[in-house]
Image (tube, rainbow, N blue to C red; front, side):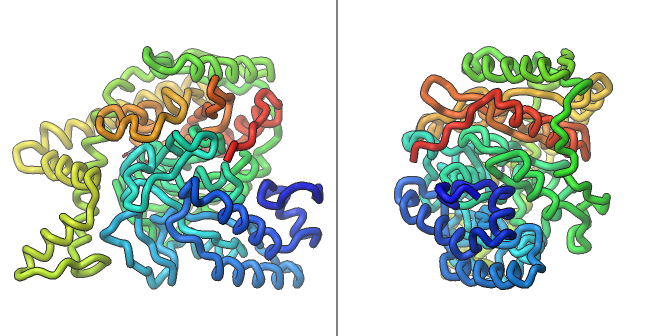
Length: 488
Ligand code: GLN
């Protein structure tokens, strides 16, 4: 290890080497992250809960494991966890007042897996309430700010997880992605984020938003680090019947640096009017870079893209309205005492949920109600099938699809809060991937004139994560973009 580097600036790949060689201890590493957190949190608000004591205990245990030579794949690596994962003994709020004091008695499967690998949990990261949003401004605990410009949003809904990695508060993190919630904040904060194929990673213990779309995934500084984390996350789980038992490849082995002959599809529908020209320029430059490395660029069409937002916001809200029924003041979290049971439900939900969550519950309940089901929910499901077919068709002509991750770079705090439709439009390039159940990764491909990061999105066919990692890593290694550290 380069001794002049602040340990919190290391990649997971570098840190695990330094830890194994005992040039760095897990306790030193977590202390560096905690120091960084103390320095930047008052400005960023990436975390809802910082687990200082637990993290130090875990780091000590990791050092003992490392000394005995039986450290797991992530032994001593500090990670932040979106506050939507059940963590035994540590409160899990989902950024909602309704779960403000909810302390789970068990770990989500992925948390248990990371724990078994020796990971150190720095804290629970901020998000939009119940993962509903694109800016982390819908958090009951205040918004997360962008580490590149404190006046701008970090993206959402996993904004805290993205900002924490960008600012060096941890080496990697977990998010969830229902319509772009890993990829958009990754793009806005200049880090790597991947939403794996639907069913690739267990969701047991992950608080449900829209169950046919939700997926778990990591954030990291580099593509290699994301591949390292994915290896530990993916794989079958008897506790989650929706989780695939397909064997998990060694994603790191896919990182050959070679993209010769790779066919990259570019959908014309993803270069729309109104998008920030600098975003388009950076993505086109990345495509030229791929060409120079031996990949072939082919034009593809995803003709039903224009219906994706409408279909998504019907399906997601319908599923959310059903999933959020369980917060009734009886079983979990907040309870507002009242005269009658019905009144208790009403008062608890009225006080516990924020405005956006209420809007979604109402939209979803309406879309599912008698007489409207066929017109809205069923029709949206049919559109979903068409979108899925668009991708199947496109993947007969290419191996991967490349697009911008979002139409703009990070917008200003408050810019879209009064206009939900404008906010929903920032998901235009990410939600189709969830509707089709495909894997998609965001990785940095440049900066705009304000120095804000721009994200390239690579989309693969189902279970095509290896090709995504290979292509992402090859681009990163080419040095086409020099990463700029966050200003904070
Ligand atoms: N912005 C989208 C929404 O609000 C996506 C959120 C997500 O992926 N969790 O639904």
